Amino acid sequence: MKINGIVAATFAAYQADGSLNLAIIPQLVNKLVADGVAGVYICGTNGEGPNMTVEERMAIAEAYVKAANKRILVLVHVGHTSIQECKKLAAHAAQIGADAFSSVAAFYFKPTSVQNLVDCMAEIASAAPELPFYYYHMPTLTGVGMDMVEFLALGEQKIPNLAGIKYTASTLHEFQACLNYKDGKFEVLSGYDEMLLSALAVGAVGAIGSTYTFAAPVYLEIIKLFRNNDLAAAGALQLKVVNFIRCIIKHPSIAAQRAIMKMMGYDLGDARLPLVPLSSDKFIELKADLTKAGFFELLEKYR
Image (cartoon, rainbow, N blue to C red):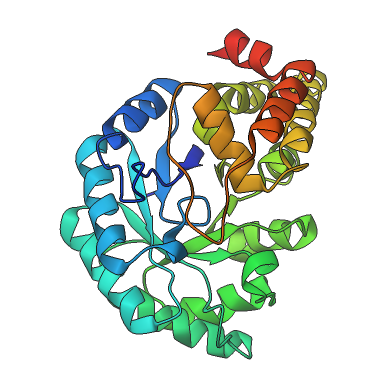
């Protein structure tokens, strides 16, 4: 499996009483298929995997695999503070027919060295040896910021199904080094939507991101312009993306993006504590800022 294009890191969906809203998943998947994404990345940061029980995460994975029906890839995030729970989720992902799985580093008792991190990921990856495994590198949230080139060098010796890294960090030089490790042996998927063009410029062909859930056609146009060598137009469009992301990060990011989904007609309910939704005033402020930044006009143009 090789990921070429963009993968949407989808958001959790809840009923008014806080229980899972599995019924909306087919609707979300159909939208993303129509938008042209290569796949979905579920139960990660935006999907609030750490906020859910293992049973809930399994139910969500089953719903996405069924709804996708092999039209797009389903990548299941299995990260947890317990490696044993990670392994349960990984084995389940393989059992239900997911296409790949992924995990962050443990974020309470943290790995203390690259070798320790590799040992942890090898244990998790061993639970589903037939599926590609991607390490989810996100040091801003996990607090685990280690040398990813060294991770690949040690990981290839101990993780037979290591496919690559979901690289959610702004260290573009290391990202490029990982891309070129052993002439591109591993996939390195860009995880910062606002840096998509920069990632493409140093050789990326795949990316995973949250704003692809509601703005995929815009990003696909950036990729198209880049591949057609129209760098000026690609840069201008990437700047528009940066400007609307700047509107988002004035607020707690997940709350703001869930609000955008609501603006687009997808009510995902309120996120679970400690996450909180935007207040009515902040919702209105965000919508006004996005309008001023040309966000809705951009979506209409490229949908």
